[in-house]
Length: 229
Length: 299
Image (cartoon, rainbow over all chains, first blue to last red):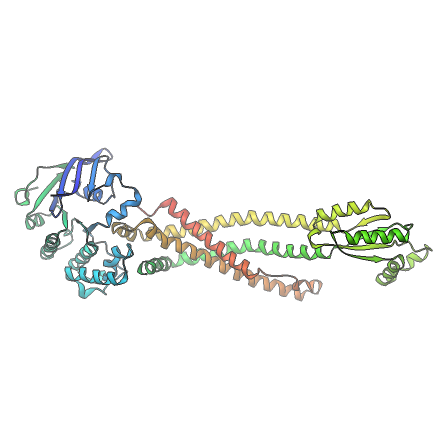
C-alpha cells in the first residue's frame, strides 16, 4: 500500500506549549481515518500542517509524495488543489450562489466554462443539493450548507479530503447524513480524514482512529474501543 | 473567461462594498492631482509663451556711421551665408529715422535739434530655429560684435533669461509638489485597498484554502487601485478644464488682458491620456504598497 500522508516526528509549539509533540503517523491511500481528541488536542494544527498553512518546528510532513515542509510559498496553492477541505463553520461566501461557491476551486485553476458546469453539477448532485444551485448559501439549512461545503471540497477530484469538526453545527440526523456522504466519497477512492471530538461521530464511523491528547499521539484503535476519550 | 470575469467582478465588488471609502479616495485623488495639474498647466503655457517669444526675437546689428558701402555689402553677405542665420533685413539711417518718426510722432522733434540724423544703419537678424536659445544667441552676438564695421549688437537677452529662469523654477516646484502629492495619492489609495483587504479577509481565507495563487488573490486589488487612480486622474482633468475655461473667460472680460486668452491652451489630448495613465500607475502603486505592507493574510 502507498502512504499518501506521512508525519515523521512532528512537533509544534505555541508560546512554549506543545500543540503537537513528536507525532509520527502514516495514512495509506484510500484510508478513512478519524482524528480524535478533545478541544486543544492539536487536531486542527495537524490538519493545517497538511495543507501548508502551518509549518512544524520539528519533523517532516509528506502529502501525496511532496515534502510540505520543503515547499516554496508559491507551490502551496498547487498542493491545496489536491486536498479538499471541509470546515465546521462551512466558510461559504454569502454573496455568491451555491453554484459559484462550489465552482471556486475550478475558477482559480482556469478550468473551462463547460467543465466547470459539468463538474459543479456532478458535485452538487453527489451531495444532493443540485436543486438549490441558484440560491444563496444563507437561505439553506445548516445541513445543506455543509453539503455545499463538501461539494466544493470534492469538485476538484481531490486525493485527500480533510474535515475539521464537520458536524459541529449539525443535529444528530444531519450528522448521520454527512457521515454517510464521507463514507461514499471514501468508497470512490478518496482518502478521508475527519477530525472530531463528538462521540456520536466516533461511534458512527467505525474506522481507523488516531487520537491526540495535548499534542501527544495515543495508541491506535477502533473508535468503539476508544469512545471514552 | 470565468477567471477574468471573477477578477473584474471582485474588483467591482470591492469598490461597491466600500462605496464611501471608494468615493472619498477618488475625490481626494482628483483634488490632489488637480493641484499638481495647476502647476503643470502653468508650466506648459509658460513654455509655449517662451517658445513664441523666442521665435519673435530679433537681433539688431548696428553699423558704424563711417562704414564703407562695400564693407556693408560684404557684411550683409557674410551674415546671410551664416548657417545660424535665418533672415537678414537692412535698415538704412534714413529708414531708421522714418520708422522712429512713424512710431513716436510726439517725440520726433527731439531729433531735429541734432541736425544730422543720429540713428545708425542696422541689420535686423532672425536666427535659425535651432539657434534661438539664450546661449546660442549670446555666442553669435559676441562673434558678430567683433566684425569690422559693427558698432553694437543688441537683443532682448535679459527678458529671455528671466523667462527661462522662471520656467526653471516652475518646473522645480511642479516636480516637488507633484512628488509630494503623488505620494499622498498612493497613501490614500493604499489605505482604501487595505480596508478592502480587511473587509474581505474571510473570502481571502476561503480562496487560499481552495488553492488560489497569490496573483489570483491580489489581482482584483491591483485592478481596484488602478481604476481608482484612473478615475481620480480623469476627474482631476475635468476639474482643471472647468477651472481653466473660467479663468480664460475672466481674461476675456478684463480688457487689459484681452487677446491673451487666445494664447492660453489646455493639455493636448495625448498629455491628458498620459495623465490618466499616471493616475492609474499611482493607484496601482498604492495597492502594491498596501499588499506588500499588510499582505493578504496567512499563507
